[in-house]
Length: 261
Image (cartoon, rainbow, N blue to C red):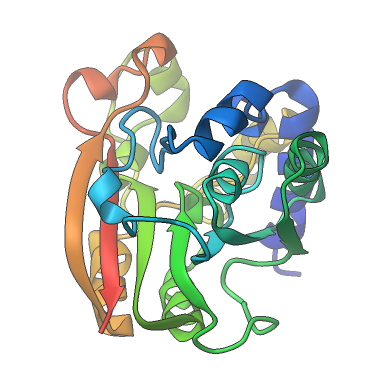
């Protein structure tokens, strides 16, 4: 029987909420109030804020889809800044973090539990902007994410995306965690097919999500193939506090802005 990645990762991210993963900790009321005054920033990757010029001049009335973006971070800030926000995420507990912020601070956010690769419940051309922070490493195939995003955006709409550099997945994971870089894997990498059952059980025993690398052809070329035109690009690294060894040598994240032509 094929491994049910979506169901497993749903439960894994619920577990991450329970254990306080940094990407599951909601923004504060003071951050929401600042966003209401026009003082706000969000991230697609760990450190660098998204450039303000990647957004419309005003978010008032802008229809925003936060895609695989649960955790009470991006969606509440954008809603407080005036956007009409819909949030799609696979994890019920991640969605609950956004619900808590919305109820606490009087925000309206439409919450939808679902797969980032299947937005069939959303109408064609119904959004002006998609915010898709680094999360497509948790699905084995990324091309449907771009195709569905293109479909639900209106003409001239944009998608802001963050994703891991594929090179991050080249290395032996245990040695990587010890600060050693030993090339072990061929790319694209998969926690389902690139390692054996015993090694994968170490990941699942800790309740960690299963991860997948994607080629740059799929991550960037896939956006172009879906019909997007890339208009923005930057690189980022893991936060210095993480002690990530590869970030000392190269950029480990990419963010892109793409427009529906």
